[in-house]
Length: 267
Length: 249
Ligand SMILES: Nc1ncnc2c1ncn2[C@@H]1O[C@H](COP(=O)(O)OP(=O)(O)O)[C@@H](O)[C@H]1O
Ligand SMILES: [Mg+2]
Image (cartoon, rainbow over the protein chains, first blue to last red):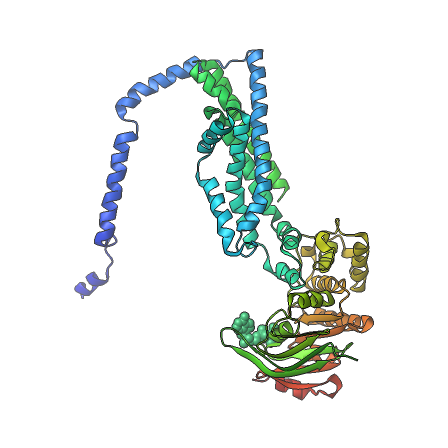
């Protein structure tokens, strides 16, 4: 009787097949090796932390000279301009891209995978890589930044717009197709109004994302406030750097408050 | 007078081998209100779609509104057919987030000059007036500005009727238009159909699996059973027992 109980009692640990066990050991080894090679060692921390505190000390107080503040102000405006122009153009381009890519909606049939691949490519390559690419093609400055945000937005909105279009209510689409409405009429008359809340939501997220991206694009020369931050660090102007970091904090915070408000409004 | 719909020896088998009906011979004259009845799965929807060219038939000839075709109409024929036909389905198929007025004007889509019919604010002025006219015919003028998703089921179905009427159709096709409504509301809807068809001289073909809807709102009843036309009679000559028989196994 006790032997039967033993047989049916599950072990404390799930039994592992040899393959799973080997995989587990390999993954464990990779993690441990990685930590050893790139994570900060105690010695590194012992040196680094005081240095960081020293740096923070030299950043205080943030620079508030009027001339500097004025230059920053224009950089902040430029940052918002990059984000706004890039997002709006990106959203406008995302709509047709998503339409061409969406299953059951696209007029391209099987070739809808072509725009889909482009959207995925835009999404998966990181924005700083796009920025480097555009800086080396159109030169330093805000234009490269805006182009980066456009590509970023298409990667993000293209995907979510297409998914929303695929999920749109099919019944009115079928009712209007039956009387001979063409695809463009169905898009504008049925699909877009149907998915408007989700379009607005994705667009606001895209704008928020764009503002975050546009503050760092300057680090690779693509315009905006990030450019000032890079200059400040390059020239060891730490009081300028701290002022810029505060400004970035404010920009992102303002953006989040604004988009949250808008989201509630458009619910 | 020429028939609105005539078929001879019509058969439909789906690509998966499912044979729905065969040897269907019909002749529907103008101004008739025809109830097409049959149990669930008898092939009512399939037959309707074949008659108006939305589904290819497998055998036989179809003549609808002067267009003769076998299997499927040519695209020119389909275009002409669609211009003269209005549809209403069991599900109203309205765009919930659009106004009632816009939904009614959607009924003009597919007609010449309809590229701006996707929103009432863009549509030509006389179409907007026509939309208000048909809305008043279904007694919903006061709802023109409401969003379609704020309507009750019966109101939504009335908007769907208005959307079909604005095409000024010669033939109105309704597939189970009252099936998902409360009984009283369903009777209202059937009455609206029947009265409007009579008033405008529209040929009405509707499907139903409700005995009262078949008997009270039609001039003629066509019954489908076991893949064939079981009977095809003027409504006044049809007894309840015969209808019961249609719905029985
Ligand atoms: N696309 C399809 N492919 C295969 N069989 C179908 C298809 N559509 C309907 N059927 C079958 O054809 C028969 C008739 O269906 P339908 O015309 O919808 O009947 P009804 O409208 O009278 O309820 C049913 O048995 C149904 O399962
Ligand atoms: Mg049916």
